[in-house]
Amino acid sequence: MPHPLARPDALVFSHVGFYVRDIDRMAGFYRDTMGFFETDRGLLGTTPLVFLSRDPGEHHQIVLAGGRPEAAGFNLINQISLRVPDLATLREMRNRVAAEPDVTDLVTATHGNAISIYFRDPEGTRLEVFLDTPWYCEQPLREPIDLDQADEAVMAQAEALARSRPRFRSRGEWRADMVKLMGYAS
Image (cartoon, rainbow, N blue to C red; front, side):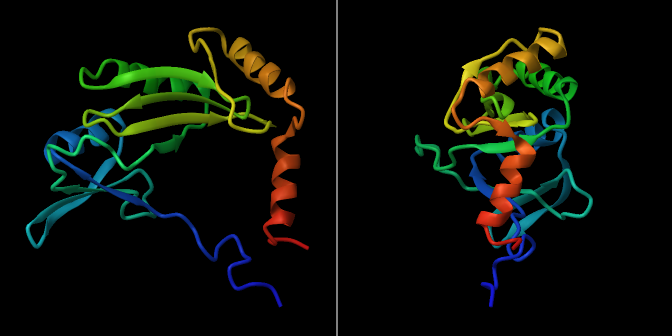
């Protein structure tokens, strides 16, 4: 008998919550710069909460909670990653965050299997906005990429990097192997 969690829908990621220092500033950043919608806001006891989503089927994908101490110099969240459908959207996000004065550490990179921008939000949480490519290659792998090139050149650079790796294959082939490995198909 298969394990009860051996179905893709048995355990699905839903949302992330994190503490912030300035809840109004951070809600504004995720709403106005990142394009999330504020679905609710209120107090849980004395803790202010803001709920944000980009999916009408999800009440929230991000929850901001006030109360992060000023002295907390280390951010426990490594990164929050968001997928986009195409290079035009990735460039638009890069331009939006580049125009935000409190965003830091903006870099563009390809991993062969994805093309990404990385940056830190106004309170230092690292975000990645990325586009999947049609290829798989083993990770970690990261090289700079110029998103101001034509789409064909950007994709050619990502593909060349992916093809240079020993376990290169299509994303579809890799996914089929993962479906079997994870026990979702026999």
